[in-house]
Length: 633
Image 1 (cartoon, rainbow, N blue to C red):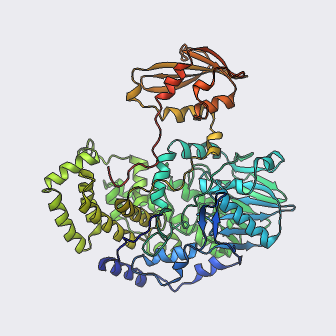
Image 2: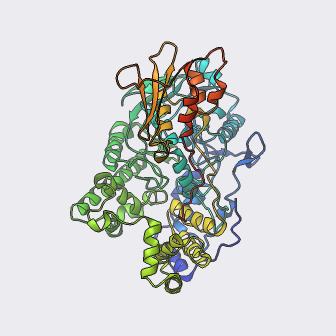
């Protein structure tokens, strides 16, 4: 973590805007504060959670400064949200259902059964999950884990599973439940584009930023990402349809599948014996993302809204409390109904109004500027854009329907950023003139324009110290004024890296457990993504793998493309080398744990042909860069 000794105070324009927020919203409404603290049973005595090597992976006390009055360097609405999210400890939701909150970005829910407990969404890393489980046991007794349930395919809802159970527990019959498609999406999202997503997540969650009134104060959905060991134990049972019922250790559950909402594979859970409804991440105390800033598939707000309507129809009449895998519960059937319908309305409104304006010819950025939310939704704290935002969600809807191109041929073949930047700066009279004018804009409080125009100077000359300093200052001011936690983190991370250089990727979800559950097809696909295309245009190499009780698998690199074919049909080229081995050994080779020159002489490996061909093929694979530049070319 880099200390923010360079952080500046808020400029007058930002301070005035933040004061206006105080005047325009009902900060005297204490319902959320009462709900966030309801059922509190206690928290951990030791605030710093460490890994086996003693490195801190989470600090429960890091956000204690949020107890003070909101300063000018933070949007008061975001400060309020972050204060609510920073409450940590064990909380009773209703009799027999408990939540560990504030121990990670997400919540871990624990439901007591006849002999033990069902753990729902065991946080992001093993260390925080183990600490949460220890806290529960300290208050409720040393009950064994008799089941685990993942509500959806994002890493902060499964990555800590090895902190609550191990492989031996599963072998002894502890079930692991998940929605249909969970494993495919958990693996593809975190492996195929995992390096880029994790690097951008460093900006989105700001885990490397100092926790302070001028630094990271939260991410809206929770505080930030823990930095411990991410793992995965594959599900042993799939939930395949809405209405499916399962009983685990005497705990009765009725499921609602919600694919394509907040995650490609997700579900809600009703507990009829508790009159309790778990909404996973489909209804939380913020406007969620339709396209997360770290990058993902664009989510469907139309489907999201319809599933929330279905949730109301299926469960509200028999639910006294609704809780989720983030934030705090809502109690009382009337309040649950209002909460879910308002959540439904915000996604439906964004979808419908974006489509209305899209069909009037407005582009994504234009829609983001024009759209105005209904006053009734704006008054509800839980619809505010602390995590997603109206601005980037409307652009996501535009992208979902029409893609990146806005129809203007002037935008069809633009120069890439660095090339365009050099031309812009030249047209504008050179870097000195641009910075001179940008400083005037800064003094006028037009920080949004400053970062837009000074970005061209930096991309034209990343070594321009004056431009980097001005850009960092302007990004910082935009962060101070943002109600959205992830926008604030992006702005402040940009300022941090412009001043101090790259901090890399604090949290990576490309974990050994995820690589281990790749199918062979997914593993081959992940290698194909790494091929240096231009560097392998002239290569034509085929390697055949003979596996026990399976069809042969042939990898061929040709025309800069790595293909894989099962069987020996016409699509499978004649191999330069054939290697007979078992699947674990093959995985070791393809994942880089075993070098090709280590294979000859092994008693469990048969080689026909030139094993050097395999080395040449693998030599055409590049290595992803988890430290790539973001705010510089």
